[in-house]
Length: 121
Image 1 (cartoon, rainbow, N blue to C red):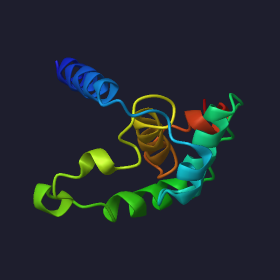
Image 2 (cartoon, helix red, strand yellow):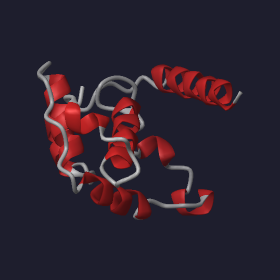
Image 3 (cartoon, one colour):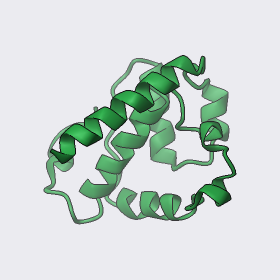
Image 4 (cartoon, rainbow, N blue to C red):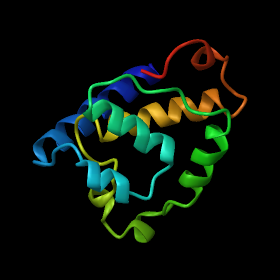
């Protein structure tokens, strides 16, 4: 049942982002973004339509630190969630955030090691 709720939220978020008129980030926007380097590398690879390399074993901690640095309450965000670098449809948006959450689980010791056996996408 929880997966249905998650799927419904995902469809709502995807629909909202698609209607926002935002497009994929440019190479310059990606370079200037304050996100982990391995995420930037993945975005650049997707824009160039090439395979991305898997992140290092340290990615779990790097991404956890990144998430810990994000605003945690609606008042801290100040209604600016749509300004977040990952709040885009397409290859350089929310899909990358979801991939990074997967990588975080894989490389923080809580995953089952599948990413270490397969390429990153």
